[in-house]
Length: 322
Image (cartoon, rainbow, N blue to C red; front, side, top):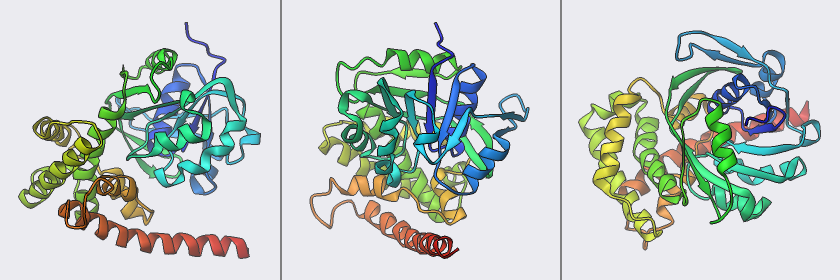
């Protein structure tokens, strides 16, 4: 039975976080958000979440029960869904003050290493991990668009941890959820898709379908996919390249008009998650000559990131002076 009094915290209420918050609010749950300072936080405080042109074409607005960058302003929470950028995961330690004794944190972030960080912060028995293939995109602060339904795959980070209640909670909100005993294969599979598609679209500016129909882009994605599969095998997660490429092809068709999150970040002048995607693959290279395609796209996007980081630092400095 659904416990409508249970409070769920979305850590990182960007496009995907806002979509999931909307679904959970529709289902009658109490939903709050932990959001870093900025225009998104201000917009959510003033106007709530606007979900533009949902699957039925309607536009709806949702009010969060609370939103703050200060955990002291948030209610105790049994479930924290983590969707912050991977480079901000370690900054979530203060959320330990609102996590209930039986509470858990669930990462649905991109890349490698997030679950390990959360397990270190809150304890391995309190961490669950997975991936989501739902589509959402930012239109303006506080306004997100529906980019297509998908599936959430989750599993306990430590074997034996009961996460069935999380599975049922998400399903009760109309979300498609698969529970697995070990989430690592799902995480590596999504990493392979991101390593192929996100990087190429970020560098070319192409939408997903355009990249899939562009022969040089397809060839580059195939090289990146093979290198990622090789890294996964070394990590003890055997993946089949041909199965991954078929999944990639299906994804390119299903999300043809979408722009990847990495392309959205580059376009908006934000830092990307390249270090936990391509950088995660490179951690399994034996020497500097291995995984040359991954190494090249990583270097190029890191160069773009350095420019974005410089702008962020300038903005932070300006705010401190004010």
